[in-house]
Length: 261
Image 1: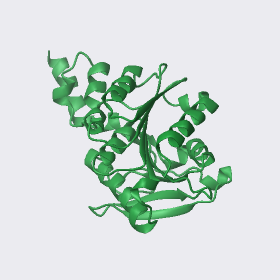
Image 2 (image 1 turned 90 degrees about the vertical axis):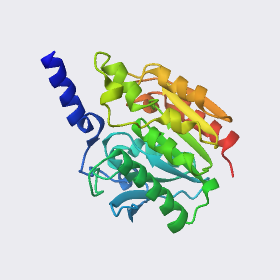
Image 3 (image 1 turned 180 degrees about the horizontal axis):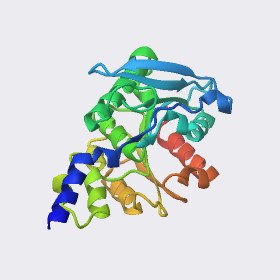
Image 4 (image 1 turned 60 degrees about the vertical axis):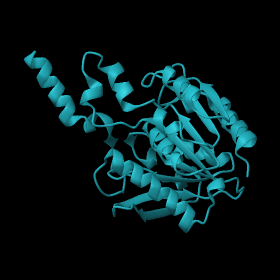
């Protein structure tokens, strides 16, 4: 009993280290894959100084606001940037506070403020209208994007390999612990999605080794219409690569059907 209590206490105290895995080193930039980009610096409402890249597209199909997952930084997402750019989308990808060149300590509310600041940058500085912005979130970033889409009406929302909530995930990983009571994090994508009124695309692999497929199905069932589900192959971190043209064509179909201006 003492060991159980001590382990529970450690989980409670250090749980942020189980959620966030930031990397401060920007290893490579979009010019490594032949894409011109702008280095962007912008500020969240609480003063945190954030960093990102804006990669323009001449095809002007809209802009994708990219909320990445819980590990690494924007420099680890070049393959995704290349795919979205090939679809005729400009891309704005940013690092949450504590990641890459962004200042501050990562917190749940902080990631929400950072996404809000990125949205405001596109609206106020780049002068996009909401109907020109596609919100995209992968893994933890899906919960951030869903949170953001509650209070705005983007062209569309795309959630890839996203969990229903941190508490749901924790209860599955640690069934022997009272995770729902211990958890200081929510990231309740399922709850946020109920308020989203934009077209929604849920992407998930049946072979996802980190976030079970049933999470994607529950998100899809909860989402309001219009909505689509794209089942891809591969693991959590390489599904979009393994699925290749099928992945790209599925996103293109969704954009063409629901998200054209």
